Length: 226
Image (cartoon, rainbow, N blue to C red; front, side):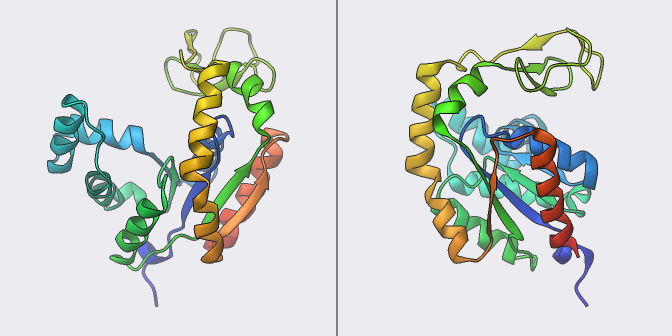
């Protein structure tokens, strides 16, 4: 019989900037107790903790260099071993390339795990500019909002924590978004073919209602844990 670790789901959310990966990952966290793992958060936490891999990442960043795949995988290895990840994880923002995907497969195989589903949030590029330019987040808890699609129930007050400070990313503008979309299609979209070949790819139309998309993702998680 497999132990709890080897049966805990490992999901990947794929999609271009603005597809809603972060929002959906947080909803899955709350509903199923899964842990969202994003590359940026992992790097910051490892640097703050002063782990061996974190120190290597810090040195690379201070030198103005990209953090290598090897370092990121080492940080991810440490994080996956933490007790709170035993119930399953959602990878948001990693892997970005097929080389990283192969390294991730090897890492998971060390503990008898594998990718249960790589979910592609499919969107219309032209609509992404409007979607991204309207984004904001709570400055206290990070909950995401949008001027058109998801406003707080009470104007200026976060539904989740009651915070009153909201932030917008300085790079959420049309020119930067177009460049990020181009980079996504060139570098990350090939992952769709990679996971399709593994029969792990599931596509979801992410242009609809947030709750509807969340329901489809919930069904995928339930299938993975059945």
